Length: 69
Image (cartoon, rainbow, N blue to C red; front, top):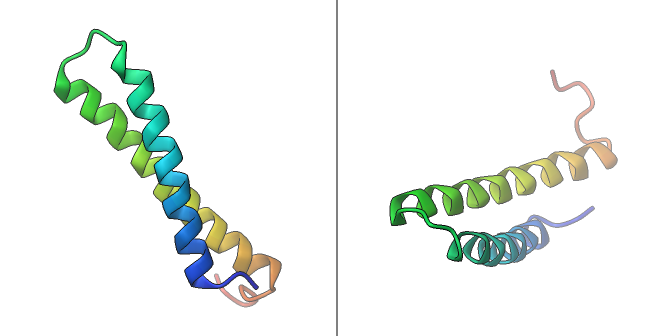
């Protein structure tokens, strides 16, 4: 099973990549700083959801969700 530490590190890697992508995406846009911050925030939230999903996947793959409803 993937350790919690590994999942945490992967989430950090994911958020770094997505943050850089978000910054690049908004850098050429004619938007207010507030709008750019909201877009970047959405990328960060998506990375957090990705980490959560991968945790659930790891638990499911290791049959650790049996009986959970």
